[in-house]
Image (tube, rainbow, N blue to C red; front, side, top):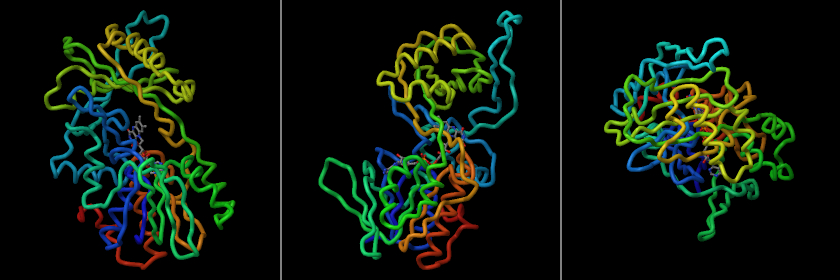
Length: 358
Ligand SMILES: Cc1cc2nc3c(=O)[nH]c(=O)nc-3n(C[C@H](O)[C@H](O)[C@H](O)COP(=O)(O)OP(=O)(O)OC[C@H]3O[C@@H](n4cnc5c(N)ncnc54)[C@H](O)[C@@H]3O)c2cc1C
């Protein structure tokens, strides 16, 4: 029996868990994937690392600058580039002479992959990986019972409070059955009002071609297919081969939401990148495509967390509470921890001093 179970080891869930852990609560984080981080994701490929979710951290918002300072002090984060380029599809009259437009922005990355940020936030926490929560049920107003859809030995967890730190559409699927067990229609309506946009990430490896003066980080504007081109391998200390990560627009990803084979989508993104930047991007040695069904909140809530009025504490949090990005995920995780603490024991939380406790 735990005080709190946190569902989801993304940045919101880990921040919430860390805050409650510091206050002395007995808790566990359950995560469906093999590792922590959620959309703060790194894939291990060809003896190197590739960031196929969040590309870099930038000092924007209220909490991310503090996180960056701490990670720089600890030697986890490094400056990746100070220049972000903007690419625009060439106008017909320009005969392909539209060069990428540079602007100054310090982008921070981790040589071993951005997931290291989540691993840092996970320090000291009890985390169960490969555990997808299938159902949450209240047991006689004493505790919540969580069951998992794992093919392994049947597994259950009991806790006095639950934090659901996953994208709103997934939270809705998980919590809708509680409509008959005291979860209000208003709560579920609020949850279902939050829509997410998808994104496809194509990861492509190239032979050791001459990549001199190549822009490392490019946002693509006004294009229907492509939103980002990054030379991801330039974040690594000893890159073995050039690896690019391309990210699609939501509009493009929407067409492939249910496609079984994502290779044609990846090839199309590569062709577009080749048209916009340099022809050889079209012909990598290998490429893979990852689908983010819930990449970015389209219609976030204007509140830090979503709390239920059930007799037992139940709180939802994530980037979709109060924003769309990492900063709102961090803020929402802290707000959810404060709410759970208020409903349980009202211990002293190190919120103001959060970063110093890590
Ligand atoms: C391609 C891409 C690029 C991005 N770039 C940026 C950027 O440059 N800057 C920025 O600020 N933000 C960026 N974002 C957004 C950023 O990643 C998110 O805002 C942030 O990571 C959200 O964190 P979270 O904890 O709310 O959710 P998530 O990271 O989604 O974490 C939720 C976790 O819950 C787990 N989970 C879900 N269902 C269950 C279940 N039933 N049982 C157990 N576990 C479950 C998931 O596996 C996941 O680990 C990007 C996102 C994507 C996809």
